Image 1 (cartoon, rainbow, N blue to C red):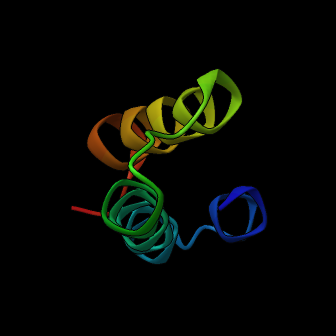
Image 2 (image 1 turned 180 degrees about the vertical axis):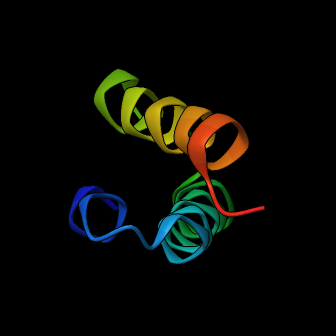
Length: 53
């Protein structure tokens, strides 16, 4: 997610988070940890504030 985000590929970074979230919750019954959620929030902020329009 971080590499995609830094490359300006916010949509792909968000899709990676969604895949990870789904895998963790459906297969393992857990949610992403604080570090992963922090990256997700950064990507969301960039996608909504500074992303392409």
